[in-house]
Image (cartoon, rainbow, N blue to C red):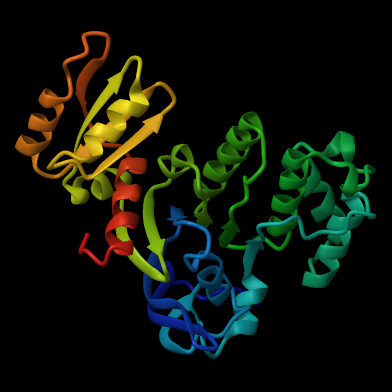
Length: 312
């Protein structure tokens, strides 16, 4: 069965999901275009995985409406499951089967035509040829990731749902994986990917940030940063722990975050924040400079505001 053509790969409105008395996803409204990489961010327990499972047909929303690849997310979950590629947080293939055997089994489940050729093509496309007869359980995290992606792509889906696919993977494997994802997006495949890594978030075309089941911000990385209206300074030098404690007590300082040997100091009132900086810059060994706030500064601010019940 082929997915119906529509302008958006994902177009849902007001999706909710409860588990008992816990409201896990609240009024999820999300649109993901074909050929777009959409980053899904938020702390653990924020509802990202539940949202992804509703979109791929594994969970039925309590209410709301919308489509995934043109199929209704309430009534056509079987069709959705047949047409999307879903990569779970944990490696979910069979560790006592080889790479080739795993892919052949998945291809049989999806009823892939010309199965042997499809498996061979998937192995070659992701550079798994030299390892085709290696047991999956003997693979490193990066190679398991490649195998999982190959399995997702066997039935040629037009939408990939990737749930923290690079967790625990080394930096080079992460970079290679993202190169592959951009190549797939260039072929018109839509990708919704959850991640905790800010460098990965910046490689997405658009982003959504979720906290306690609600989307707090959406847009491009530049739009999300601009909408926060944050002002930021950076300082490096000695005695940063004592400086951080002093800064947190000053008016106009909303957050102080240490990144290695540098503190980021952020607020919304530029004048108040500059006064706090001036009052804290007596030590000539410490070097201050005005900087543009980054995504991590913005997400920390969004999370703090939501946790404290303040509007973003």
